[in-house]
Length: 325
Image (tube, rainbow, N blue to C red; front, side, top):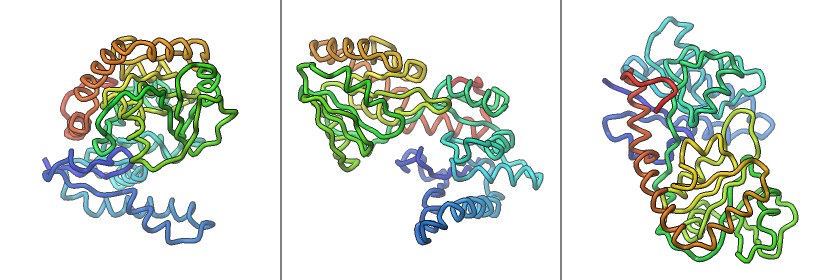
């Protein structure tokens, strides 16, 4: 079979696809054109170039048996259905551009062979929100990116970072007064900062370097109606052997076993988060044991190669259980 994958945010590392899979950079196609325009035109132009990208895929699709598209490629399955074409299409990115109305999202999903979700709860949410049959969705956990990984150490501080959907207030309340330094890396506005906490914004490389040197990684999340955020952060942390504490049990349970390969507490649970951080920071043997389990699990289940295998299996139409990886 000859297959095509379009690169979006899910595919920072091109190497897992290998020379036998053709790759198109859909984000690069859109952004290289939109960025040349005045800001007032960029939003409308972005929608137009998404259609243009889909038309490009239509032109080249005759060479392929299946095509995987990301968030910028949603017009392709729609146009293909309108034209009566039957190439197998898999949607790999549910950070959908049209959230409120959702007509394009639904049409694209219904016209696709499968829609990849990173967690089981997202499958339920997207199916209910958009009226898309549950059997359209498949569970494909997000992969860490190998370029983000650095040699791990344990320098005695708590790491937290990111920008999407972060619950900084709960984290700050939880660490206030704890005898451990806390380093937060974000470009978001952070509320009152305790004396043991610093806030900075650094490059992507330095973000993950500081993560690799931390004693534990906390991912404090706000409740979200649809997509689970924070997965990019905690999959990288797990791959580097970090103990991860996530404040989203619904999303985290698909990536870690509580107390074995990570920890999770309820949204907004200040005391639960405080106790979990204290327990982890007081016990180096616990950090070593859980961190090793996290590393082994991440490389087994969330590596770029495993992500590739799962996407290509669905793209090739190989029998797999819907809603399972």
